[in-house]
Each structure stands twice: as C-alpha cells, then as structure tokens.
Length: 326
Image 1: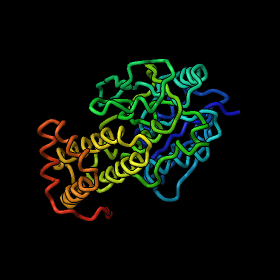
Image 2: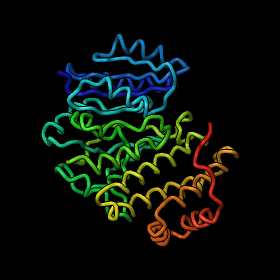
Image 3: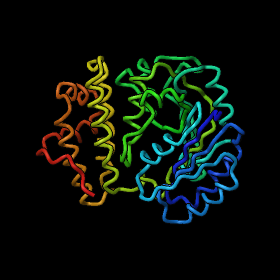
C-alpha cells in the first residue's frame, strides 16, 4: 500500500532539478512514491529525470509528448498516483530533510480532507517565511468558513498546491484535479473548489517546502500571453461561486480577489509585450462587465484609490472579445 504520492512536474529546469531530486531522496520511505512528470522539456531535464528514475527509491517517470502546462502535468500525476495521500512539489523547488514523514504523521493524526502548511520563499539568498492566513493551527476546521471575510486575506488566498497534503477521497469526489490547460493561476479555481466543497481541513506551522522565486523561466517572470490565463481562471471561480447555495455570501470575496489580481497585472503592465498588454486591457475590461455590477461597485468603493482608479478607467473601455489567441 502506497501511503504518499508526491507529484512533481518538470519543465526546462535543468539547473534546479538536481536540488529538487536530492531533497526528495532525503524524504524517501518504502511506502512513498514520487511521480516525476516531464512536461516535454527541451533542455537536459529529461536526462536528469532518467537518472532519477533509476536512482531515486519510489520514482515513477511519466513523459508528455507535448507541453501541456502545470495544471495538465499535475493532473497526469494525480491519475497515476496510488497513495492514500497526495501532495505536490514544483520541479524548481526543494524540501527540508524528513519533511514528508512529518506531514504524513500530521495527516494520520488529524484525519481531515486536507492540510495547509507554511512555507519558505527563497529569492536569491533571501529567505522569508509565508504563513497560511489561518490563526487556528493544528485543529480540524470547516474549509467553507475559512473563505471569509471578504476584506482580509484568508486561506482561500493561499493557493499554493505544494503547501499541503490531500486525502485520496478528494480525488474520488472529483475535487483535486486542476482545470486542464490553464497555464497560470491554475491553483485559484482549485483552492476555491476545495474550500467550497471539501468537508474538513487544518493549518499547520510545519515548515519544509522551499519555494524558489525569481526563476527566469517561471511564468510569474514572463510577460507573455500565457499570463492572461488568470482571466479564464477567475472567470471559473466566479461562475462556480455563482452556482453555490451561499453565492450571495461568497461572491464579494471572489470579486474582490479577481479585482485585486487584475489591478496587480495592470499596475505592472510594462513587463508585458505590447500586443499582450493591449489584450490585458481589453480582456480585463470585458471581464469587469461580466461581473455582478452591484458587487463590483461595492468592491471598488472599498479598495485603495490607486487600484480602484485603474479598474474604473478600464471599466469605461469598450468591451472586447474574451478569447486569448497565442
């Protein structure tokens, strides 16, 4: 019986994959498996993973013939996973030794649907601890109650899939897969779905994941059309939340988060290629018109003047097509 399945997508991370794999070796156990998904890398990553398949206990190597993006790669891993519990790691991040056995022990003790953990963000030599926005630690909670309040950061805003562990029953209920083809913000509809539909979760102060920021190949650093998938991602959040029995209660939070991310991208629009910047403006203007206008007005009234001003100017633009072309 496999206790834990660790799903690790890799794409063109030849400089970082050795550290990732070394940290996995420091977390092996006879009932752990490591599903290494090569998302059609074009550098030396496939050769590195081929060696890992031979040398890393519990390694299972899966190769994509075409690049599908992080969401699709994670889904491939979920479909191959055999563990009672599942977790994720990105191919350019790393772990503290012995972290996964501690995480599994906590899951065994608490028995909830999923656990969220703190993490260490690494930018160059700088280190910063980022904590789950949940004050109650080590106790089982209702994930739906952790979505609100709308005007504060909550657990639903802490979307990192690798910062936690998930029971297989979430797979069986159709709650753990990501939206196929999303190339960025893939974790936003996913975390909202977990918090709306799972039955129990807990937050832990356990530190063990080291999240590497500032990687040149990361989509967070690239201003191309793939970044605009946040529109698709948050449209899904809004559409699914609108169908929720408590839509009136939850929608202000969903709209506020969408607007905050939109304003963030508009505030750094100079990093986008000119054609993509134009698409960002037109697609965002169309998205604002699709939102429930009474809720949107309340959200913008409660935002700071700079972000609200960006959105109000955009709201006056003509509506454009919502489809992004690559």
